[in-house]
Length: 331
Image (cartoon, rainbow, N blue to C red; front, side):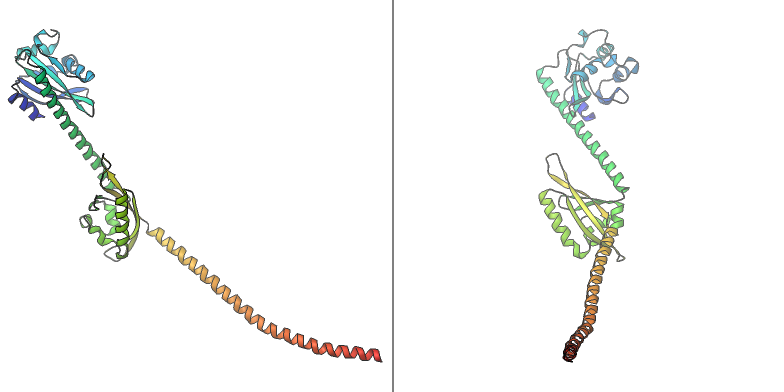
């Protein structure tokens, strides 16, 4: 901002140039940059709170309308404007004020003073408008960067205290950040996990699965979900569920991924216990069936002998009984 003011004086031969930015919380206009013949003008006229808001009436109009203000003859302005006499005393004969905008909102002013009456003609105004637009663009870029840094700070503050593992990668999967919980689950230091280093902590049998799922999700620009194991240096293993979603820019292009890993070791242990219990139950049913079949066989064998013997006796005794009955009738 100081450079913009200096260029206007050195190259444009203006008497003075200054940039003001609005402090909405304090309800004040604050000088952000200035250059040239000032001699207390900004302190006495712009920053004198006792004169506020009369002293910046043109600025107030600028904020309201969002349009440039052009005063090609300061001496002909309303004599009640306090800043008018200050300007004339410093040799300022004409003045132009351009709005500075960020995301379409007026957030300040770019003011220039000349020692010539009628200095600001169409050509000069057009060039100065372009300069004010460049300053606005720079301020907007600064605001975007400020918000990005604030967002980054908030992200890392939350991530560092998160109860789940968090990681970020570039579009190609190159890891750029892992939080403390991730390191705890993987048994690896953050610096060791950067790039492709984190794969060293993944169980050999699971690496191919992760790579295939990641590649497919990236091609389809969708969320990636996979379950895999971390093997720590001490040999202990932990199961995790990894989820990653693409970070898109304003044009819908993937800039990278942000994801989480959640410890599911207890769930996996419970699932294993259920599987073992199921196998045990199935084995028990099998043994029971085999036992009943064996008992049935062992019971059926003597019973078959008994039944055969009974049938034999029935046949033998039945014949004798029939003969006795016949003999009795004959007698």
